[in-house]
Image (cartoon, rainbow, N blue to C red; front, side):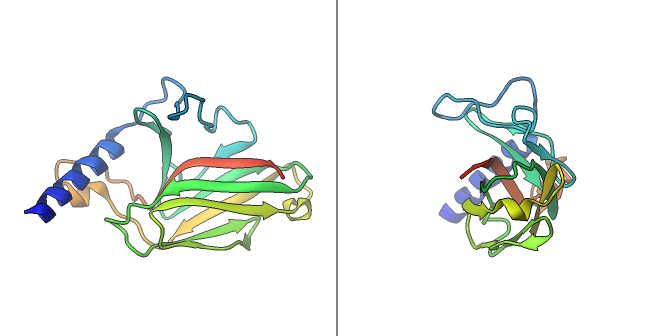
Length: 169
């Protein structure tokens, strides 16, 4: 019985998260500060593979399918890259996220529901162009409507990005 209740609770949570999508106001985190979004931070742009910004009561996120591309403005300085988000382990356990910076692999992210991973990016790795490419790939995804027949969400969901930090070290 407890297992059924847990499963139903998780299905309701996934359905609620998948159904929330509005860009009417800036997201707010629990501390009250505005959370960075693609439109709020000109140094970070979400591209192919990412869904529109979604919002909850105190957070915001962008779902990624199998792969997502983020463009980062080059600073010509040593930078700190921080990736925060979550993997719905109840739907896709043991997933691995491959992280590529300008085509070069960084340390993968695996086996974690809550992701908060930091990387040091030397100025030389940013190349000579105006931007760098951050590419995230996951080996597992799920489709909400395959789990909940009342859902109309047919997106492939693999990783929910809540925040990307790109700042000088």
